[in-house]
Structure formats: structure tokens, C-alpha cells
Length: 402
Image (cartoon, rainbow, N blue to C red; front, top):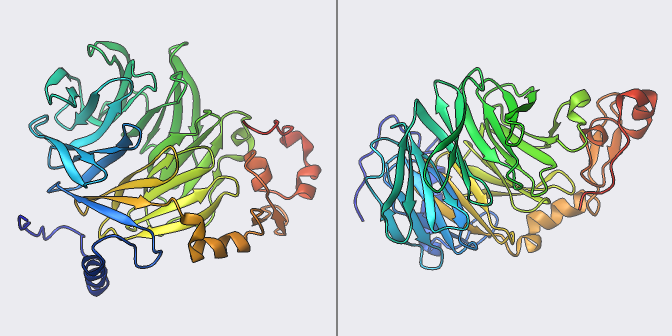
């Protein structure tokens, strides 16, 4: 293994140093197969020489695609933990994000070199390359694989391109007032959500070709990431203010009450979030942890520890058995959460929640009240009696989401 030069400006060693050393020794003794604190099996993918900026489970969750500030992208075999192909020379500067294009054998990467590149994953050949105006900070593919979106800085704009040939179909200039940190298609390929350092959330509609929703998130710092639930009814946002919020786009409860903050969030800036199905959310943080959230109760289920530096990205498999996390420690970790419900920590939390019914504190009267399911933010900020006092402020609840 090649010895890496230590960067004196890096924060890879946790405060005190000794705790990080103990974790590393434990990994070496256990073969890097099981988390010491939670007993969750994991694998470590080592191949990048700088911060891993993104990691995505792909190809029916049998592969992981990662990219890095070292200007490379790697397609990994999950079973062997070895690279199937390393893509060097795609960009001349940091790769900020990558994504597999659905219904194809291609990936898209964007970089500070102002270029979006689509590459054939099988041959390693560049399919097309497009130079845009500005440093590219994020990218995403529509679920049908027909469209790509990327964000550019400092123009604070988004580009929507044809995935097949790279033709720019739409350019929305000055979409935000500050750097766009993430852009995401919904699963229906009808809207593009963007979040920004200006702390706003925007939805751009592909049919009407205009911004249909602009929300002041009330986050106290940069909004770093966003993700849709599968049905597109909810959007989750992550922020450097250490919090995660849920936005009910279907019923619109946020218009009167804002987003719903998830309880017991991270101890440092939240960098990333990702949904698997509508009842499991995964988040990553600069506190070096990955957190799992049960959306039926809006409670944190499990915290995964092991990275020795900031977690920069997370991804979760469709069957909710695997979580991939990228980190500034130059690694990707694969966490096997298939038997998560058997972990003592999870069992204890389930029991404390009262069989899935968490107790929250009413913001109006301060009294505790139970919440049995995710509906709208109305149910999660005030108790039943306080809601009755101001009926005009609350919409009737929609039927259960399916």
C-alpha cells in the first residue's frame, strides 16, 4: 500500500488522536468487518488519495460508484471491495459529484474545471464532454435516464441537458442568490429541486419551465443537500446548522408551519441525506457519523461510527440492506444494516418509542403528545387541543400515502 503524505491542514485525526487510533486498531484486529459500537458489519473501500466527494450504490445495488477530489472516479465490486474500473484523466480539477445514468451503462461527472463528462462504464471511453460557464458543484440524472441537471457557481444557475448527446435544453440563470449546493430530480422526472447557501429551497417544473415553489427553509446555515421520497410527496433537506427537515410538498403544511425538524440530529454540520423507501432516511455529517431515521416515527434509529473524518455523502440500497458512505478520510464504507432490528441499541429505542409512537413536545402549550405516523408538519408541532384552538391555520389531513 502506498504511504500517503500527511496534510498539516487536514482534520483527519479526531480530537485527542487516541480515540481514532483505538478505532483503527480495532478495525485491524477485526478485519474491518464489524463496527465496535453497534456490531454492524461493514467493509472499507480504499482506492482514492483525497476526499471522496460522492458515493452511489448502483446496478441493482451490486456496485458502488465513487468520485474524489483526486480527480478520479471508481466503479467498485461490492463483494470483493476491489475496483472494477478506475477512471483517471476525466477532469483537470476536483470532481464534485458523479451519478450513474439509469437505463444505460454510463455515468456523469462534474467538476470545478467547468466540464460535465459522460463516460461509458464498460469501455472507459468518453461519450461526450460539455464545457459550461462556472464551477460545477452538483449533478443528477432523471430516473428515466433522458435528462441531466447540474449546478454552476458563481452564476448560481442550473443547466438541464440531454443525456444522450449533451445538448443544453434549459439554462436557468441566477436561480439562487448564492452557491447551489445540490440539484435533484424527483423520481417522476417532473421537477428539479435545488438547495443553496442562500438557505432557500426551489422547485423548477420541467413542463411549465419555471420555478413553481420557492421556500425560505429557516435553516440557520447553508442547506447542503436534499432528497425526495419515492412518491415525491416529501422533500428532506440537510444543513450545516446540524439539522434535517422534512417538507410536505403534497399537502403544503409547510406554508403555515415550515418544515418538520427531525429530533436528535447530528452534533455537527449535516452534509448529506438519502431516502431508500419512504420509511428509511440516511444522513451523513461532519461529526464523522452516519445516522438512520425511521420515517414512520421520525426518530433516529441508529448511528454508524467508524469514519475518521467528515462524512461527505451517503447512499442507501433499495432493499434497505446496505448503506454506502463517502468521507474526507479518502474511503467509502459499506454498512450491512439487514439485521439492524436485532441490534440492542435499536431494540431499546423501539421500546422507548412505545411500539412506534414517539412522544413529542407541543410547541404551543409545552405538553407531551404522541405521534403515530408521518402526515404533515401540523401533527408534529402542536398537540390535538392546541390545533383545535386555531382550526383556520390547519388543513384537513390527507389520506395515508401509499
